[in-house]
Image 1 (cartoon, rainbow, N blue to C red):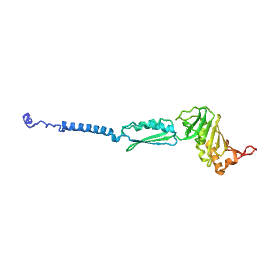
Image 2 (spheres, rainbow, N blue to C red):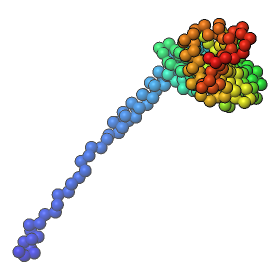
Image 3 (cartoon, helix red, strand yellow):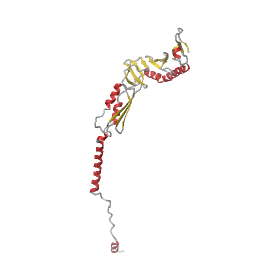
Length: 267
């Protein structure tokens, strides 16, 4: 085929154009206007007096003192005109949890306002030491200076310690006392009235029926407390009959009968 024939049958390729529709100025403007209206509507809703916080309800732990309750109310003071949706409830929860006696704090938003719930650390004993009496919880955390007539067991450790509110009181003497207290609930029908740990970490306790129980060194304390619980299960009036029970060695138990001048005898 000649060059002329090839030239006659050749045609340029069909041009392909991008047929994507272009957004008109009107549609772009409408989209931006919708965004602006949404922002203004949101701002109007947040600033509406209808959504202001009208009430603050407190649910405070009965274990908290009057001063502690007042501190919560001061921390949760809400200025008039504060918007409920915009209120930083998480920040208030964090501020409340910084108070050393607080175990937990929660802020809930309702239809009319806030509900502030605060749980206090539950004091389990009064720790008597060089720094004076302090209420402590079951983990040994210092809660507050001891209040009068708490009815809590008294723990005495013959060692120097200086508590920091909201922090755990460290040391093996207190650890031994906490083990005793943790297992004292099994001594029905009596309760532990006091626990003493001396400088050699020898432990003894006194029950509510005036029985002195010598536990000795802080070893096998759970087993010793379990043995004491079995003695009370067998004889609920144990403290009426005995003045001293010696559990320093689980292989050889002894006791002193109440009013007996003969001294210790095997139990």
